Amino acid sequence: MKIIAGLGNPGKEYKNTRHNAGFMVIREISQKHGILLKKKAFGGLYGFGKIFGKDVILFEPQTYMNLSGEAVNAVCARHLEKKEDLLVINDDAALPLGTIRIRGKGSSGGHNGLGSIIQYIGTDFARLRVGVGKGAPLIDMKDHVLSDFLAEESKVLDEVIQKAAICAEKWLSEGLKRAMAGYNDRKTSGEKLPEAL
Image 1 (spheres, rainbow, N blue to C red):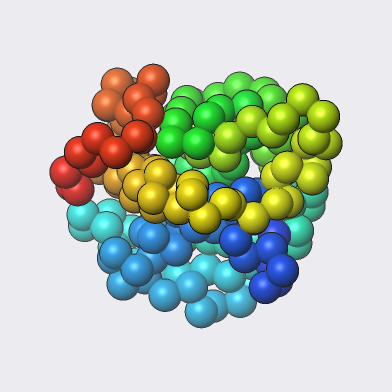
Image 2: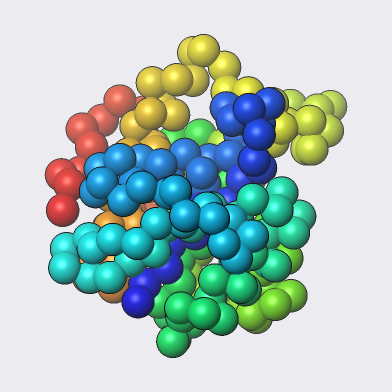
């Protein structure tokens, strides 16, 4: 079983904020493959399905970002056999909007959701970071990630959410190395998107 967990904050007031980029990618994958996130357990919403013939759980913690580790650990304890079968998708304010990065392990990079997960399961799991743009020097980082995307960012946002979903598919179907080779160091700025798998 593979688990793809997207991080964010529950509630309508957070729906379109930068911190919810992980939720946005999970919803894109959910719609694309018809995997409904209607089950409630493990402190989150989830759905079972198959993508390219592989058994997959799509998961959204509902614990708020800082406690993401509680929910991700709970679903992993029940359904995960190997840590390399977990992919966590999160926003990253240090990356420009339109950029994604995928890697197999590492620190939290100051991201509270990743930090919470690391407390429970360690650092050896894949993570896909979705750039949400750097705030101005005088803008508090918390204010930045909890702000809504601007109207003029919508086109690039839509494209990068699609690109991140395709990257997650590549991780699922061909593994981490192929996903890293195909998607790291690439930006979205109106160029043609890679073809869906």
